[in-house]
Each structure stands twice: as C-alpha cells, then as structure tokens.
Image (cartoon, rainbow, N blue to C red; front, side, top):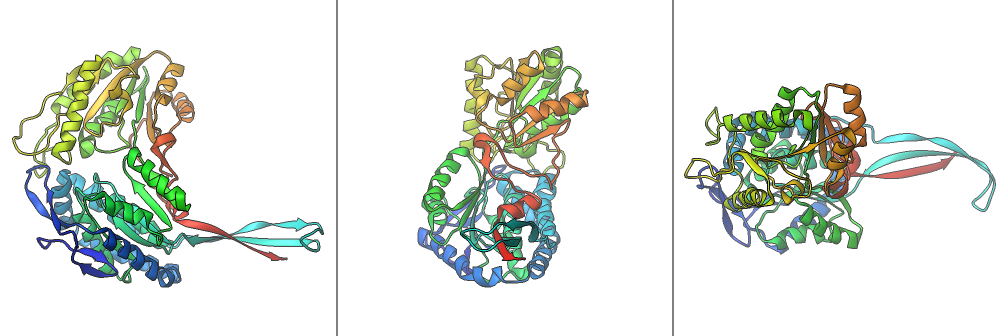
Amino acid sequence: MSEEQPLFVGGEWVTPEGGYYPVTDPATEETVGRAPEASPDQARAACAAAREAFGAWSRTRPEERAAILGRAAEIVRDRLVPYADLARAETGATTGTARAMQVGVAAARFRRYASVEPAEWAVVPQVNEAGPLGRGGVLGALAVRQPVGVVTCVTSYNNPWANPAGKIAPALAMGNTVVVKPAPQDPLSVYRMAEALAAAGVPPGVVNVVSGRDVAVGEAVVACDDVDMVSFTGSTAVGRRIAEVCGRDMKRQLMELGGKGAALVFDDADLASAVAGIGTTFSFYSGQICTAPTRVLAQRGVYERLVERLAGYADRLKVGDPREPDTVVGPVISAEHRARVESYVDLGRKEGAVVVAGGERPGPEKGFYVAPTLLADCTNDMRVAREEIFGPVVVVIPFDDEDEGVALADDSDYGLIDYVWSGDVARAFRVARRLRAGGVGINTVGRNMEAPFGGFRKSGVGRDVGVYALHAYSEVQALVWPG
C-alpha cells in the first residue's frame, strides 16, 4: 500500500483535491496510512461516472456479472493475510476476527452473489370482462426484477470488508453501479476491495470509492441527481438525515441503523450458552456492533447467578494488542469513542447501576482500550439501558414473568435483533414471535446468512442478506399481454 491513497473514480486512481489525512491504528495510535479527502465536486464526479457506466453494465448478461464477482472472491481470498493485516490495523480487530469475520466474510459475500438468481416469474393469468379498457379476455403477466440504477453505499467503521461487500456484491449482481463512501476512520480497506474488483474485471465506473472526513462529501454522494438509491449502515441520527434527503427526490433507501438488542434469559435457560452468547458483546469488535445483546433481561430466579457468571466471564477476557494470539478484546475505534463509552459507564453509576465488572480503563498505555463492563441492578428507563453505547458494556435488568419480559424488550426505540434463552423451546418460539424486532436469536447469537436482515422502528428500513439483498437492490417491473 502506498503512503498516500488516491481516490477510485471511473476506473482511475485520482489525486484528492482535499489532500490526505492520517488513518490511526486504535491499538498503537500510530499512523496506518494516509487516506484521500475528496472534494464535493469529486464526489459528484464519482456519481456521474457510475451513471455513465450504468447502461452498459445493466445490459451485461447476469452470468458475466456473476463470473466477475466470483473472480473477485478468489482475489480477496488469495490476498487474505495482507488485507486482514490492514483491516486489523485500521479497526483494532483481533487477527482472528479480521481474517474470518472481516475479509473472510467479504470473500464469502462476493462468492454468494457469483450465482445467477431467477429475475422473473409468471403471475397468475387474469380473466377480464369487457369494459372501458377494451374487450374481455385473458391477460398474462410477468414480473421482472430490474436494477435500481446508481447506488450510493455509505458504510460503517466497524467492518470495512463485510459491510461494503454486503452492499456492493448484490448491487452489482443485479446490474447496478455503485459509489462507495466508506467511514472516515478506516477507508483504506475499501480501496483494496475496489482494487480487487478492478482486477476481477469490473468495467470502469461500475465501482467508485470516495472518502473524506468532511460531511459535505457524504452529503454530495447522497444528494447527487445521478443517484437512484442510498444504502446506509450507521447511526439512526445520520440515517434520519439521509432519509430526509432521499425523501425529497423519492430515492430508494436501505437503512441498517442502531440497535439495543434485548436478551431475555428465562429461569430454565442453559446459563453457559447464555453467558457465552451475551459475552460476545465484550469481545466481538469490542462491542462496536449493532446486533450485540447489550440489554440483558434476566428472570428473577436466575438473575443473581447470571450476573455473577457474566461478571466472571468479563473479568477473564484478555484486553490488549489485537496482534497477540491470546487477545480477546481489542481497542475501540478512536480516543473520542473511548471517551463516549466511558461517559456512559459513569452515567450508569450516577443513574444507580452497580458496576460488577470493568468500569476502569485497562492497562495498555497506548491504544483506545475499554474494559469489558457489566452494569447490574439497572432499570429500563436508564439511559444506559435505552441508548446505544456501541462498546463492550452490558446492562442487566430483572423481570418476573413472560409478559413483563416481552414488555421490557419492546420498550425501546430500536428493534434490530433480540435474543431468547429458554429450555422450553415452545416458549422460546412463542416469545420470539411476540418481540418487535427484525430478527430473534433463539438460544444462539449465530446468524443464518440467507435469513433477511433489518430492523423495526428506528433500527432501519428494508431487508438485505441472501436473496433479500437482490430484492433490495432491484425494482419490480410488470409486463402484461393478451393471452
């Protein structure tokens, strides 16, 4: 990787008009590289390049597009180690997470969409009586999926490989062209992804990447008249601003926003399974993930034991250099974000929560580390229980019966993914169906990567993953003819 990373616009590596800014390794506070600061005009030029490329790309055979995505998957796999090293340096993820869950998942997502899905299906013929529109007869119909057009993909900082790949791959498979605006904290990995796609044969202008810390760059790629759809992953506050812009021009939206996942643990739950699942909030991306079970609702019969075991689990996790093989919890993304997470822990104390694990800044002198922290004796009206902290912090709230547990879980602005732990499978499924969340994990935090993903309420708009992503990045056209 060169010291100064150029933009990628119209198939060319372009010098940024705004210069460069340093990308910081959150584990060492050293500079990883220098990222390009695009100007708003360059952002609009990227959208124009995507618009120019759209016609030819949308008319390519689906098999040809699939073959390119397949080659991209192989290139990413072949370069897994250097790509993962860069991702680890940009994000602070552990080596295992960077390889398996960042670069590895990105390659898998390109491979997933390197297959041709049926894009049309017959509609039941309709018998029409004679009337103002013509003589009576039978009308046949065909529903056809067509690409939306130019898609702006605004991606999150917590996974600069899997998140962009989850947008780019299905969008390209459907015949769209894309402009990617990566998060300013870790954009260098996304440029490596563009490099791999270009090597795989993606034509100029089909994929464009523009980065920058100036909000004007993001606003330009959202508001540009050349853009037909915006796919965004990030905070609800920013999502609301993007939705307002999209609403003015009736642009399509796909929004994956914040979360405050409730984990209901019933008296008959397998506590080992529940602790291991909830404990991923401490370790997986250091809690910087919207799907984390951060708000634990424990039935009173198991409450004290669950708190004790979660505290012991948190205390045993090694916090430190993500390059070390035994490190479990790496840093958060920046000094500013560490301060934000720590302020929530202090707020929890003031609100009356009891800190039973963590709560103090851990040992490494360099790096933006936060100790895995457990707050017990919480109530659902506390800010630490209602607001997304996005760090290795778990709150625990007691409940008495099933109805109260469901009511507490649904008493939230969010509704992305909730969880239920119970030895009674029938009850677990019954409770899951009552929860107002886009997904529910039943005795697991695992995800089926063909299942639809998205949220209720302020957790987002639309669904993606698997075939649902192909639906998200397409419009349905009806063709009707006389039988």
